[in-house]
Length: 134
Image (tube, rainbow, N blue to C red; front, top):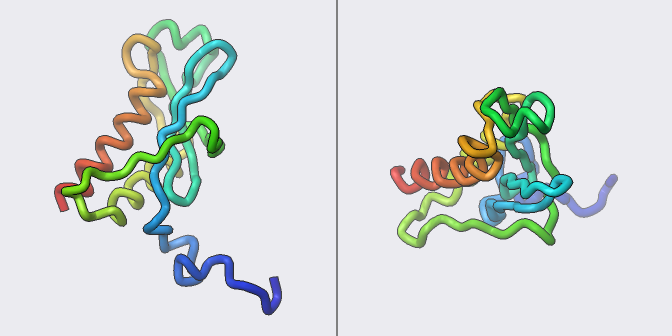
């Protein structure tokens, strides 16, 4: 875009180190085959979710899981704001951004024990607690 509008002005022309502080963290819940699947998106629309590292059948037991890149989908994603008493939105978004860009991170996975929805809600809750404590 030579001489055009700076599409990164909202992050002071530094999209790698700066964040869209007015963007919202999103919790997304959709379907994979016949299963519900949940993932999280940062304000920058980087998204990730926890999946079984092995076959889909491994999910019925407890086994390794891995954080995988996901896509933002406005039809299944809803914004999740910090509680009003927490004023550190920047820390909240920074924390979520770090977690959703940690593609390949290993976690235990099992449908009845710790699954994609647990990981997504833990990410939001952990980052919310971190932001509220600062």
